[in-house]
Amino acid sequence: MILYRLLFLLFVLPATPVFGQSVDWSNAETVTITLSSFEFAPETIEIEHGRPYRLVFVNRSSGGHNFVAREFFRTAQMPAEDRARLDRGRIELDGGERAEVRVFVAEPGRYDVHCSHFMHSVFGMTGDLVVR
Ligand SMILES: [Cu+2]
Image (cartoon, rainbow, N blue to C red; front, side, top):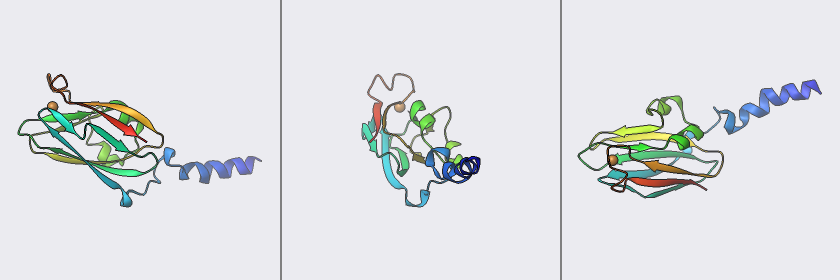
């Protein structure tokens, strides 16, 4: 019995995506999110749970914007080098800048997204990220 439990801990748990390292990022599907003054496009970003994605952020405006989704990024699995692009659940983009992060979310959910630059969310820079 103890042997089975040990085998489970050694082999089954590490293979489960929730416990990391086993996501195959090579077939990540690309989803592009455009930032401009003052909107995200699409306003509702939809991805599926249990599949890897490459989120590509493109700032089309000359001024800076950011993509803040703290709860989403807390929930998502990401390669360490991509997570390093985040600052407390925020991706900052200078005018014209582009950024990519890979994400994998195990469970369905809905997350708020906004730009935290002064007054930008009031002007319309809010959105949803839906994990189906
Ligand atoms: Cu903004």
